[in-house]
View (cartoon, rainbow, N blue to C red):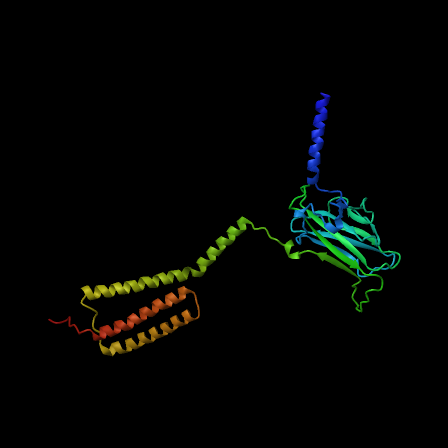
Length: 318
């Protein structure tokens, strides 16, 4: 029984060793990352091992140049389209002294660096400048926005921000505005505004587009169809009149001439309108309606000429 217990314990420990690399580091990352400092390599276990511009890493209230022994309170912020919390590591390569704030801690492996003590955001930390002028202070800040599932996976995204605080007296700015401190960021702000497509909203938009199209073009389709029906009816009437009615009735020239002029003027105006619509690139329906009406007016001119040439028929003879 004791032997079985030992065997089960060994199996459990082996499984735990396999699972451990897949778990996150909510209490702060290790300083050593495969033989290199994590501030130089980044959080390579997360997000496919490469930095991502989807994460905007920012630090605010950063002085342009430090004053000797002065303490500055800075805020580290992570921004991502969906991941709201994460962690960080910041290091000044031993230039000054960091003081941890709420949610952050001094790293045991590198006392000169800070990391998160628990997943969060908007960490307020303090940095005290050196007591003597040691030249520019170089900083490396790694921010990791995680999806909160406790695993190293593609849903975690990280980025690296490198910045410098100049030595005392290095920046002389002639302005009345307070530009002694600044906010420094890295990342793509546009990536923060990725809107998820709602299927219901897309369907509602499609239905609205159909309704707008019907409202805009409904009358056009109706009049275009009606004009085609009228032209077809006129042609059919002409055919039956010639075949079964003995041809068109006679129209006296005293009436035919003014009627032909009126119909000709209407036909010419409609033809000009049709040509304008085609040349101006107007919707095809407008050109179709104008074209059908032009044909109808031309037919009216033709009808007037045919009636004027038709022989007189005396129907009131005894």
